[in-house]
Image (cartoon, rainbow, N blue to C red; front, side, top):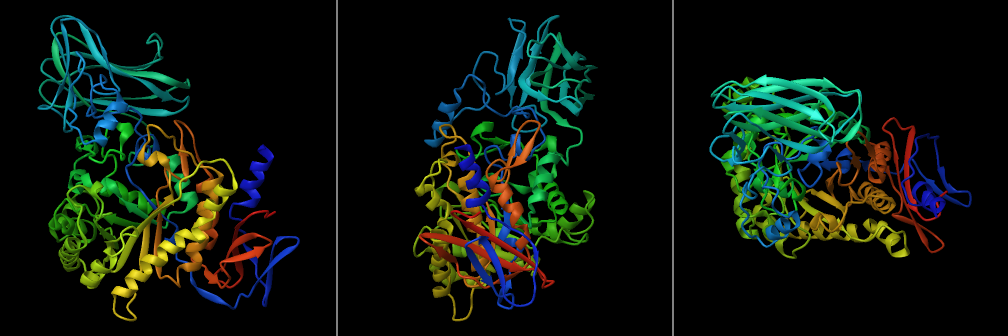
Length: 612
């Protein structure tokens, strides 16, 4: 069975890409000894845009925490609910839109994922929503007498030889002796510690670095105070010291291996609660963002801790050589969107360009792509859930204001493949206010066991996904003047996963079926980019949801990531004209071929059964 699975993965269903010197005249590409495809290098069909291989970066599930973010502690800003809550009950309460009280619960009242140190009537732990370093609350501890108390978190993974940076933000009413430490699970073996005497009245940082000589998946990070006194704790942090602006370098290097020509951010559903100006604070002072969409951040108590703002995002894009694409929150104002465009693209003599320059970024970011909302037809987007007529007016208002601020930007309107009649109404009303039109597609959901039905689902992009693009394309064409074709972008696409909507009862899994599906989809994009006028396709999403699997100390490209890495061979090449599929018996062979701009290098990708 293992041998069969390996054969499926390596030879039968994945894309097989290879560069080769291309001689003049017909070229035969051998799929197996008895089957040949003839490719005429003179029959080209346009250039394969690298934007067909773009990716989303959205704060969902494990994509940020335990994913791209280098931060190790959970709930580092103490915003999550008290541990008294059963997390499944909280999750399903959110599905029913029930109210959930934040930061209240057991007698110790310690924020989620942290435990109290010390007990008795001389110690009081509480959440403080009035005094904090980072909103909405801090962890307060009162010591009534000469006693010890504090908080800690277990399950902190460490690795030998890694240099860690650790700190807490503190505020005290009296000078109080403080000890921060990292111990084994028993608390008896101390790996690192720092003693400190707190300052009075102002927030200040207790920080230290340590290079550890032990690997331990379950250490304890603790901070303990010797009373009497009153102290507040906020914005705890523990990261490898070599982090890239708060992000894991090993994850970023794999993104670079895959190649990310364009990166769409901050979402997605995450945009409904995202206010970009909050990121202009230093990272530890940024508001912990509470999500109102239950499936977005179920594993972090419905909070995001705002590790990545606009400046960090642009730095990541520059390192990856990725074109940034930004999505506006339509629950925010049109003026806020204009300010964001000016912050990104304005010169230093504009209001927001000057603010950017004062923050150390003198040159404009030159962001080209801006989306006016995300899935605005869906009630999951909160107040920014519009009908087509209302969205058309919102689109016009945002687009006019943004184009006035920067006429060079590309405006992407939010469309759908799900509601027949929606697209014609938006396009016929507001075609002049958009440069691209987006839709989203998530393919069939099935198990990971390789069966005939699953195999058909792996191949389904060539049939079902293409039909969705044709549907959107047809509605756009029918609603626009003859000859005026608005490019379409599928800026979220993936195979369906049950865990996205119900993460507590389903686990994330990427394997051979996803590899088949992605390879078939990318082949289809390459072939259909011209006929269907596809401008970009943006996969949802790379980190811990499709391409890169992240563990505490390791990370690797899974089946999806390997497919994207292999398809780099097609980026920017000239597409060669081939049929969508070639029949070999009853089994179709899904083929795409392209020629390098130098006219010499051939790249081909083949997906199908019995390829050896």
